[in-house]
Image (cartoon, rainbow, N blue to C red):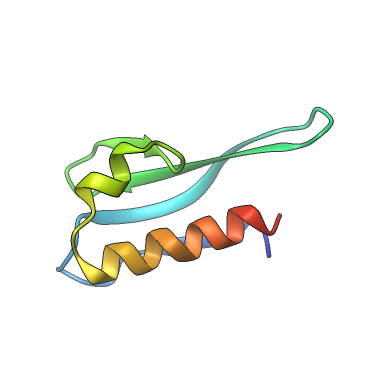
Length: 74
């Protein structure tokens, strides 16, 4: 997987606009920070528990799960 992985919504459905790696802390171990940008402009860290409660659309849930899988495989 890759820190260059990025999700960009191509759908009018769902609340997520983009999921991307916003920062890489080059300490040991390397820490990757992933940002979830919502269509309303709100930003969340990928690991914020609130995302589990606000994502209801299947497209958003799929994107969220793929981002988590990528994050865990880095």
